[in-house]
Length: 330
Ligand SMILES: Nc1nc2c(c(=O)[nH]1)N[C@H]1C(S)=C(S)[C@@H](COP(=O)(O)OP(=O)(O)OC[C@H]3O[C@@H](n4cnc5c(N)ncnc54)[C@H](O)[C@@H]3O)O[C@H]1N2
Ligand code: MOO
Image (cartoon, rainbow, N blue to C red; front, side, top):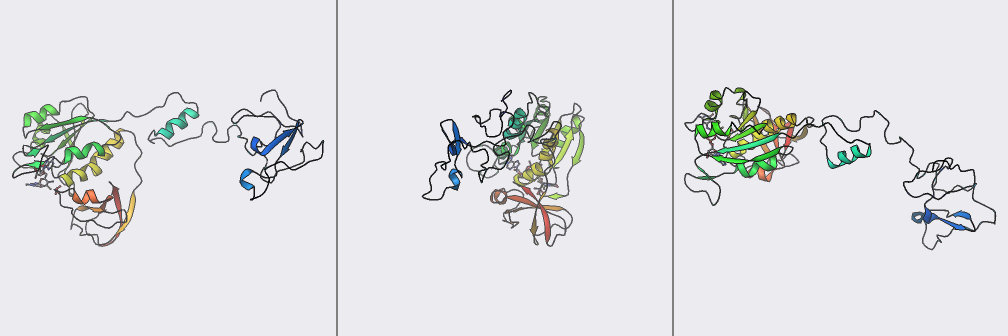
């Protein structure tokens, strides 16, 4: 309370959050005091300190005792007073650069007096699912499979804005057309990464003068995954058509790309102990496991069953027989 100065033995009423006058050593909650004939009396303990049968009333004091020498047992100096600058000082880093602006970060920034924040824009993503054989409703039948990647992707693209999903037949000119969509920072294609007659992605990218940065990786599943940059800087992430391989490519290639474009800090690795999980002789294997690192099985490249049962994919290095491995949370 600017302009008010308390002397020893004096008290002043103050609402929660209001400035306190100069001079007091602490604040006593109003429910722990009483005022009789202009004299403030303080209960010996707080409500929480009362034992069964004890009165909450202030102890009897002789008239004239203003309580100035009385120190309540639970009232150290400074109690219930927030000092200016006690949470942080000018120039302190409140959250590290690269942090996600969560609701708490937004509130903290406002509380610290910021009107604007310098942020990365969320990357914008468009998805293109290819395949003559794909169905989008009903049960699979001979020669036709349900699109399992399109429904899986939106929930995996956290931190990005998704324009939507386009479904294409195996037609190179339709694919080339889809890759001209210039509102997206990243175009995600599903299928057509391999070398079969209907796998047009690499030829289409060559025709568009794209620079291929990643053309296959030593990882099972997911080994045909691809990353390319179009001449105008837009990225193309090619997910393999086998659904579990597509998931592997999202976790190991697409998500790190989106995190980087969105300015997010690199996630600290999570690890678990994993025994002999059937390591590949020369490639890294991704094995669906529980949080405790127990393989759940059902991990064929065309099936998402194991991933659906698992908490994470364990990153199993070639030749692994047992030891600590990285987990990619699902
Ligand atoms: N000659 C070679 N053939 C293949 C190789 C190879 O190295 N040499 N790699 C195999 C691996 S591993 C994978 S993975 C696939 C990747 O194939 P593509 O990305 O070209 O995808 P497609 O041929 O279109 O499809 C493969 C498989 O997945 C089914 N599929 C495709 N899209 C979906 C979808 N959205 N939802 C569910 N299932 C999908 C598709 O019907 C095929 O059965 O290549 C291998 N071949
Ligand atoms: O990427 Mo493929 O599905 O390795 O098996």
